[in-house]
Image 1 (cartoon, rainbow, N blue to C red):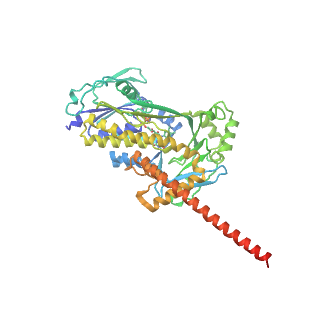
Image 2: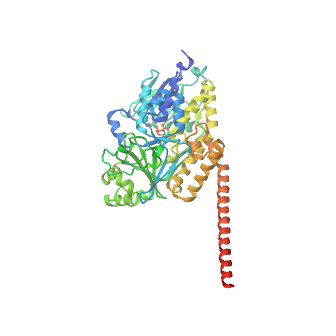
Image 3: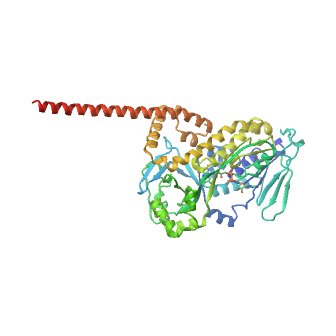
Length: 504
Ligand SMILES: Cc1cc2nc3c(=O)[nH]c(=O)nc-3n(C[C@H](O)[C@H](O)[C@H](O)COP(=O)(O)OP(=O)(O)OC[C@H]3O[C@@H](n4cnc5c(N)ncnc54)[C@H](O)[C@@H]3O)c2cc1C
């Protein structure tokens, strides 16, 4: 038996990040106990519920690299339903669609249904003998986090046991877990493990709700009830054979209806439907989009602002989703440190909740798992040294992506429609083509380059921004000078011909 096999890792939260962490530790030979407060989402009753709210996620390089770092074949299996998206498709009020490619060389992000991905990861866990998943159990408390101990593998057996106290969410019975050597908190934005760590040490912590909510809507597959089709294939390399028959919109794009203060987005599902999300200020959800608004007013709002989307959705489906689906809040969480010695650590949304506008929440959480495992392996699973190093080295990257995500909301709902933004984007692309790896657009560094840490991407962008501003000013200045010179030239010619006519 290897030393890892005699140790048990307790993971709280069987969401996306908790499941990947469980797979990663199990593959290293640890016994894994995974606890989840909700029922198994593969149960038939739960599946109906999860289909009602089917958030789609954009999975990109960091997420895919992290999945592959755990197990290449598992990654292929869980990612089999990806729908590639090569760019944004911006819809204006008149129904015109403009394609803005994400990468210069055909790179793509990928749409996947969150609940489908979570179910696939749980299926993978079922295949492993050293993983036990306990559903319907909510963590209430972790004991003994405060006292310091050295927790490397050699003396972990002698260290103080951190007991986990759970309550059965169906039975209300208490469960105390005493056999766990180290706890991983992957229990989301409102993490109980984080609260327990906060009681044990001085954690810097900030939480901010943005003044916008989101609401999920749906465009059905064409063979379902879609009213019509706005399939645009102006980015030909992005369109896959046969898609036009199934999808009402081009599936290989992330569709955006930007309306400055709010926006609607749509991501394709492999069944031909699109999951749409409306992001809008709270004030709008309090008035025009209040739950008490009449059907006629709701339909009128959507027909005025998103006519081309509503045509595909149909009034009935719009109203059904509008009435049934909850309004979701959006929260940012930053904190540090993430660990208490070698006893407990938080990853995923528990450590860094971010608004979804860069499509990085899950990708970053998966990258947490890859980063943590690499550090732990380097230190031969000396948890105290590994966890401390993780906190020290990961902090700046997590802060960077939380801030970047917040800034991207403005870009998606407003900037994508402005000429200045499009000019900047094309100069950015041009410089990248000319300079190759020396100049990578920010989106490329964040979404397509898992080897570039978030904080470095932000640093690179700062000097690039200065140069971009200078190049654009210089080009505009030169064009103005050239225009003025041309104008002066024409004026001179006109005056001299007038003079010669008068003096003839
Ligand atoms: C509208 C929207 C769109 C998004 N789009 C994207 C995107 O395109 N790309 C992307 O990368 N990310 C996206 N995200 C973010 C992504 O959904 C999250 O970052 C990701 O789901 C976080 O996973 P997690 O496992 O850390 O947390 P969660 O998914 O929140 O999972 C935590 C789990 O812990 C369980 N739990 C909580 N408390 C306890 C407890 N006390 N005891 C036991 N179990 C507990 C919960 O039931 C849950 O199952 C989006 C988010 C939103 C809201």
